[in-house]
Image 1 (tube, helix red, strand yellow):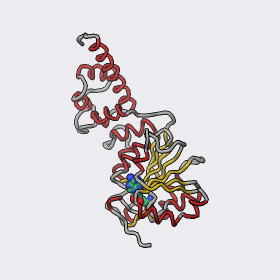
Image 2 (image 1 turned 180 degrees about the vertical axis):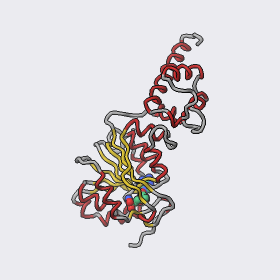
Image 3 (image 1 turned 90 degrees about the vertical axis):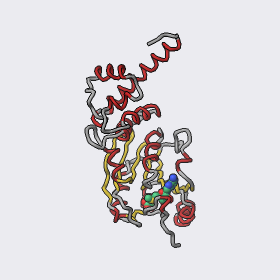
Image 4 (image 1 turned 45 degrees about the horizontal axis):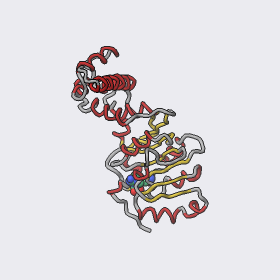
Length: 273
Ligand code: SAM
């Protein structure tokens, strides 16, 4: 059966055997279920099934039919489950699955960041091994002080240990994408979470990366309060967003919330601040 790659689903099929083996080897040990997002033609699914029970999500119904045939034996033996549809629509109340699971995926570029963020916030997901566009990977991997240090780096560092698994050039795929890729891995720290409000706060913090953090935050929060918090934490007002540590971001956010809570309480009592 001849199947053409569809651009609208970001289909670039991984053909390089060495890269596939590196991905398989990088998956953390343990019996937890492996979830593959976007199984494609099943070229990564095949070696995955040699070591793990796999559940795969695939949005393209034509590929779904192909996968059902290719893995009919594994489906019958209950080593493989295929779910046809958009994986994002299965993320209900923050969880993709009811059991603990590990993600392995070669993600389409247009949806990669969104899927990684969902998985980072899903308590049942314990690790994520993903292929993403090199630029996106570098944002997740960046450390404080580096030019790429962004809200994605802060979110990733708040919940997980992130590392690079392997660099992947366009020639590893069929058809070849126009960009380089990276396989990166997140190992989640148990119990840590980032709230939606903290993520919103990070959007304000990094809204203009070349401006100072103080300036970015003062478009939303009181300058006076920010000055106090910066002083307490010995943070210079001229720091740019990429120069502030994840711990400091959490502390600034916590102090601002305390302040907002106090303002709310006193306005309820009809007091002026
Ligand atoms: N895993 C295969 C490989 O490595 O060769 C395919 C990778 S290809 C880059 C991405 C796959 O994700 C495609 O098969 C595409 O149809 C599927 N996909 C795209 N968006 C999806 C979504 N929202 N939910 C589930 N699958 C999706």
